[in-house]
Amino acid sequence: MSRTPSLRPLYNYPGWVIQEIKLNTDLVMVRLRRDLRLKIYCPNCLRVAGENRRVIQSAKDLALGPVNLVQILYEAIQGYCNGCHQYFTLLPPGIEPKAKATKRLMHYVCKLCRFMATDKVPIFLPISISTSRRWDKKILAEQLPSPDLDNLRVILIDEKSIGPHHNYVTVVINGDNGDVLHLAEGKKKESLEAFFLKLTLEQIANIKAVGMYRAGAYKAVVKEYAPEAAIVFDKFHLIANYNEAIDKVRRAEWHKADEENKKFIKGQRYNLFKNPENLKPEQDRSLKELCEFNEPLFQSYLLKDALKGLWTYVYPKSASKFLDKWISWATETDLAPLVSFANGLNRDRKEVLSFIRHRITSAKLEAFNATISRIVKRACGYKDLEYLFLKIRQERCPPVLQR
Ligand SMILES: [Zn+2]
Image (cartoon, rainbow, N blue to C red; front, side, top):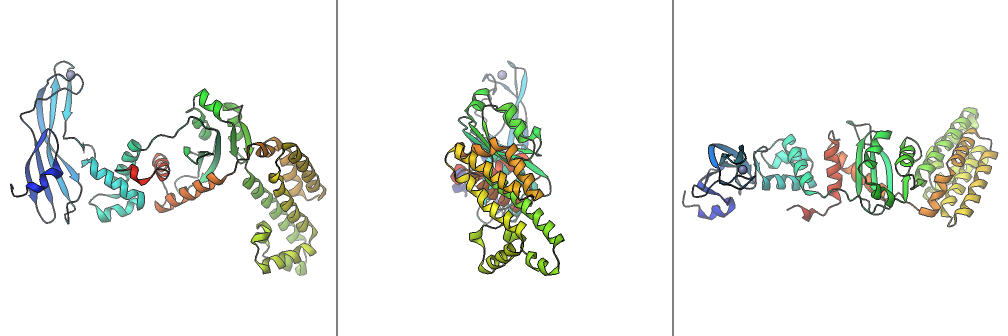
């Protein structure tokens, strides 16, 4: 046993001495006992305390060379303090008795989980999938700084569908730096309220603008909790809404058309949604043909291009005039889906036009969407939203954070 002194520095636990290191080809066992020369102190009042009993416990540790399983057997001391009248337990530092593992092994698992799916960890280490998830979550919760809620200037709110375990989650992101601030089940009022309830009045007062899409309960919540903040309806969501309107026109035209004209409408759905510069030459040609034959679709298509011009304005007043014009053009088409879309724009004009002043883009939101999709896909969904939130936050921290 004394021939392995070189391994001793690897198992240096102050207060405990190495009694024995057993080396086998498939198992390394390190036996620790309490250093009897040391007194026991109460962790509360630091008075000298008495020993009640000692128990042998075990903890898994990092692999050693080709040996994957390293067990540390140690004496846990149960003490009793006459001052506090309380029992306490003394353990070698760096051991997590509940996890039955050393902290450094848990950190290592957390590091692996950053770059591989948790269900792959058991290929490398003698632990189960659920254990690797549990440890990963625990270390992340301890290590990651909580979201910075001070000096929020712009926030973005969105809903996101995240796979089989949850229908939707509500997300709040810092619009300036992309930091994920909040993740909650559902897309209801309460899902967002929970975020504002975390903020102080001072933190709320800092928020100048809130970007969101217009459906759902979010607007009412922002008005209630942050009445001073400007609400900005997201440009891309609005264009997507307009695309839905075009699609309704397309379907109506299809039903009206005779066989000859159906030929032109067929297969045009996505061409109508695309930006003209993204159309391939043959798509461009067939869309042009369609527009020649079908005036309603031609009008809808032209109006989409015009609508995009709204967000290029620099002055709110000019943008407002343009919006009026656009609304009247859309109304004049007499096409029900376009008229209804135009009415909606008119109703929400304040939130639509506030883009001009605040110029909120959803670029940070899109980056976030890419991140969350990647994480959820790798784990085949997340049951535990708290864990998912940590995993998303981890992506924003450099890997060196984890030692
Ligand atoms: Zn005490």
